[in-house]
Length: 214
Image (tube, rainbow, N blue to C red):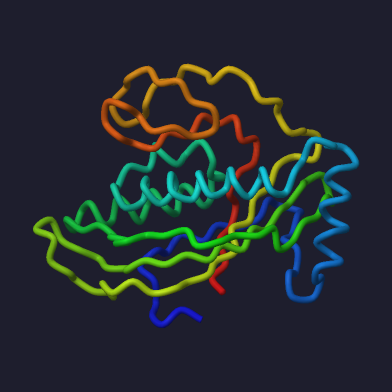
């Protein structure tokens, strides 16, 4: 359990008419069955590759948050959770604040739940990470929160229409960096060589729809 109330307040919701796998009640067998259901129409889906992609997206989404730049995360977030993130960023900007996740580390992750029902593929990735969690003002003074890094766990729920399949690896596409406008070659994510922003290309095909704290 988290030791304090985190400063992030964007949680999202799964797609209308769908639901997230119940990790606790479905157990490992339910996860295995869900992955099998996805692989029936998408034989290229691979849990390990998916988790690796999520690790990259994890840092990109949280960079967008901590640097107050919501366009950086829009390509991988469903509209509701992205609008929640953007609204809180605008609120922080008006107060001259930002949320600092100092010494952020991605410790581990697994696919904890999966399903393919009601027209959607849904995958829950349980992420173990650590960081400080403070709100700081423009001068870097702590407004609230805990600067000392601590361990935390979240379920990040990704969804896509069940009609989609895993894209084949290819030549990275040239996209405009949403931070500085430079043209950058991006596969799923990359770092802009001009401004160091994490860029999401949109090739992932899945959208982050909800985050549950564990």
